[in-house]
Length: 498
Ligand SMILES: [Zn+2]
Image 1 (cartoon, rainbow, N blue to C red):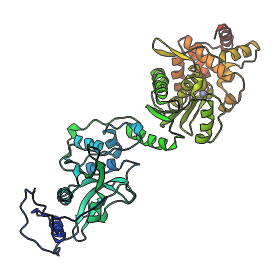
Image 2 (cartoon, helix red, strand yellow):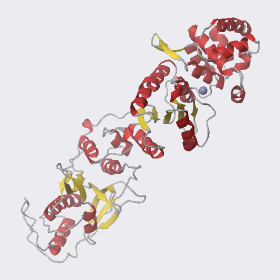
Image 3 (cartoon, helix red, strand yellow):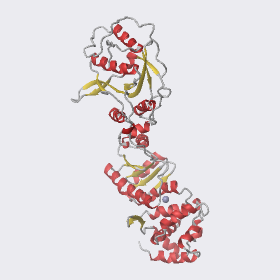
Image 4 (cartoon, rainbow, N blue to C red):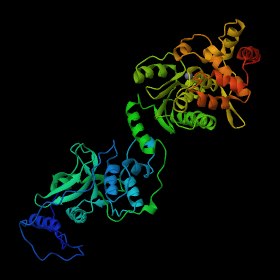
């Protein structure tokens, strides 16, 4: 299906390389008249062998860039733009192409062409009909004329497996009849050479025309013209850009257990679930976005350090089965958890969104208050397991943890706040009793007294000198006698209802 016929070629341009190309084409052409559309006069010399003056072109100064996965077009365009003095990278190209990152792929030609044009490049027709020898010849005549004159072309080629790849053709060696190109798809792909005929053959792509019929095309972007900085969008200062999300989602797609899993980008998280796209979208906006907006409003200025996936499994069966498959273990909670090492929040979403809001607090705490002790990290996170808004701010409501706490208070077995504040991570999590509840309802009390947000910020600021937050608690409460305060707090808790 993919074929190549040698074709005649002639031009009056002065370049020795171009002359050499013309010589070759004349020597190998047998029957095709290619000059019908020529506007330049025909050469008056018609030698039948390459002249001895033909020589290899000078080494290119165009930088070589190895592509990120699936960013071959982005890498090619970046090489050109950097060579023209634009200090951008392949992520920048992707980010200005308007591609939805949830597709988990790099730019296709039309998207790449859009970015190239936005920079001011003159890219030419891009899609060239190549169903006849004359069409193939005409296309490559123009491309080679540019290339020899120092204007590279981004060309889509197919490899031996028929996978389409972008490469940047930047020179022609007349002595060997070889094209020189940067191949961003492989390590060491700088200034590769290939027999011209072979390369042109690789540039013939099979496509469908508007009637759905198979057609043959050459797809190539010229890179002429000057960069127009006025047209370029301003750079962003986001930690992760769409390019990062596209790369992340590309990898995530390869890990999906089955086709039921759908991906929704809800920055800074990537939400993935198997309860249907509408349901995943609903949770992404109704719970994830809501919670992120609300906790950032009062507490956190920085997003999590890494891109974190939110896995929403539709039921206990899916939750258990896929935990083993994806993370290699059976979870020790039926609701959900945050795994920093897997960079994942993992939920059985059929148990409700409360745990999800709880877990969302943890990666934010990690980035914004890395020294936060477990008691306050879990106290604040569990406060929002049952949450609502008041005056536009997130608030925690009473919940199921109240009952056990009341029992421990009644039994006179609740540790002091001084003990709670000084628990190590191990001590806090080893408790089978009411550490979570005690921490939660201390936070609840501070919230209802209008002190919780102030406490968080003061604690964070003082944490080097007061790592457990006990002294800061005294300051916020304006109380030295925390034992007496605790008695009052216990009476307060005993009157709470759920
Ligand atoms: Zn937690």
